[in-house]
Length: 556
Image 1 (cartoon, rainbow, N blue to C red):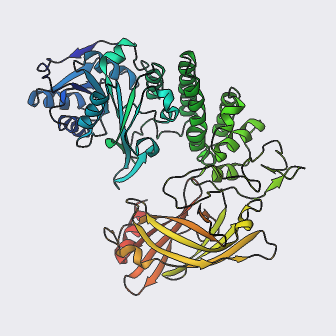
Image 2 (cartoon, rainbow, N blue to C red):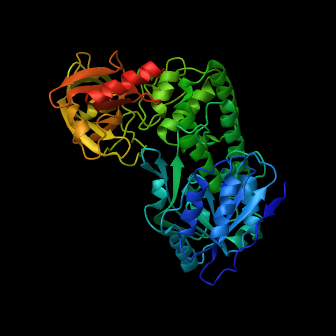
Image 3 (cartoon, helix red, strand yellow):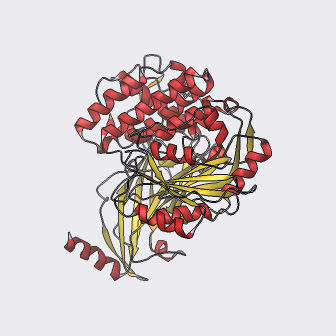
């Protein structure tokens, strides 16, 4: 490991100042000052901010040194050689920390106001060496906040051991937590050194394996900035190379080994289930966009990894995830990618055909009858829970949506597929189509239509009239800029059941349309399919929007 050159130490901590915040940075001169200032703004609770420059070449180190000259609580460590990962610089900062507690912060993220005091107060009140709080993923530049693992942080809680709440393994982040420094050093807990991706998976597993008391607070304590348009993607976003999946699998195997060696059986099983529900589903959702070579290698790696899972661990996963795992295990080569992609979406959509085995039980297909779709037979309960959808039960119902835009008031042709008789038994009667502006989740108008059963009884159809013009008049609208809108559906059934479903984008209407509008003269609308296959819309209005699109085409 390379030695770090430390700047002059800051002042001795006062009794109230007990937290060291470790900020790591590599070639991030644009954002690092904001991160450091967000830590300093936490008030007297922060004794010091230790900024570790991982041998940057863009002026990051100089920017940190300038901050240290004006702020006595900032100390800067300069690494002589880039580590290739996040673990080594975090370990440097941990070793240099003088505070009783330590937190970690990445250079392109921020701590919201009150984060450190909230965690520190909870840790001290309950004598817990680990305190954790809510994190949001903020999509930039839209500033759309998406909660991270919200179910874990809906209310304050105290767990005497992690095994009292095995679901804690789902939060693999290290940055939304406060740690007692003597707890980490006493158990020799550190990050993997060097070029190790997903190092926070391993660090979190080591923390949980030590069995600390953990306190959680509902306060938002970390803002994770997601910059999808950045030239250099973060590790979690840069999934185009199959090496990323290989690294994730290695980290997960290490997590299972750490928890297993510590005798934490409940946590080990929960970590395996989390892999299926989150990691596997996320990568399957993108599999159809990858090259044939990527798919073949991904499939081989995944089958090898899943072969080590116990049947009970697979069965404990949510319905779409366990079915996905069983399809991969049952087939030696990639197959049924469109169906797998749709099923991996949130909410999942199971496309036809709907095959059964000789006993009439739902199975994946006639070619893979060994893959049972448990939970879909009549009398079975749907077991997926997607927060935020007003739907119970939530079944993987498939709804095809074919947009037909010929005027500002366009049409959406829907076909709702039955699902092994489950939907027919409920008796669908109507559908509500809702639009939500993606950057802030602001709702738009809701459109309702009656569902009509097809002659063969296997589906229902409806035509929904969409008035798109009001979308550009909502508060906060940017009329001349194409604005993404998500489209969701809610089925109402005769027995009172309401089912929230996603829409599968189909048809020839997935292209840009220039529509006449009495209020805005012209309306620009583009229905499109998301990575997961769901229908979405981009809408803009006014002649300026048309000119902007034309100018972009000319530049390209």
